[in-house]
Image (tube, rainbow, N blue to C red; front, side):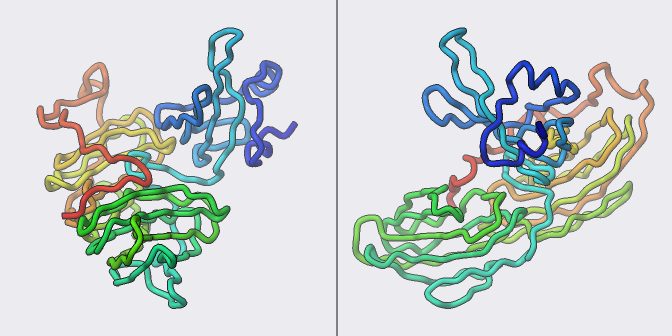
Length: 345
């Protein structure tokens, strides 16, 4: 059995079978970065796992399905599916390290083509004739919408290439919203549909944006970062730095709404903060990824310097940490997840 190939098929595979595991014992799973989705009362899915071995690498994202087994009152693994080459994924914000092509997307609506970055446009819809926009998207695109100046109660839906509605949101008139980022993992035509909820007419302004339009930056000790973000939309900076075991990576303090998060090659958080400096000591050599963004999607900018210092063991406490201010314990604002919305200012 070619297990690596089976992982990449749509059909679920029984990884949990004892015989299968005995045959492929050389693998290491990582679950700390996963998110859980309940499919029904007895079945849940862990998305975002990483497995090294079984023909998979750190860049392959794995979804694992578990089902309750009444016979022994446990949850058993019933299937798995891999998203090959997903790259490093910052799940809290649904950002990815994968480069998106084209960086500036276009969409079709009402027979016309529109550029999707930094361009809010006015549209209308009725119950009988909803607004429909289509965009051909690729893995690596991270889609966010800004919807403002709505004249009536409205509904937004995003539909995947198979025609399945994957996001639904009901909004109120005049209340601008910024959608959470939606990371695209399948190539194909995606559809946005907006309609009045209670009949009648609807007018609104729409911005459809690829938040992953900044190229990856190679960082080293002393690198200067200067970046800005589009307002009222999800938009982020990404950089990568190669570190040796025992290196300390630090980035200077950001302003109050700017978040910084450092992840390793397995998408595990190393250090994250909002409005504070970042400092993390790594115990494994490899590439480490820096994501910088406005936690509310309200634009802004960041200017700072990267510091990489090779530390002696005596410089580090027993748990590998260094002193941080009390404010560093402050949790960052929680995003509601893919498909959720935050109010626009």
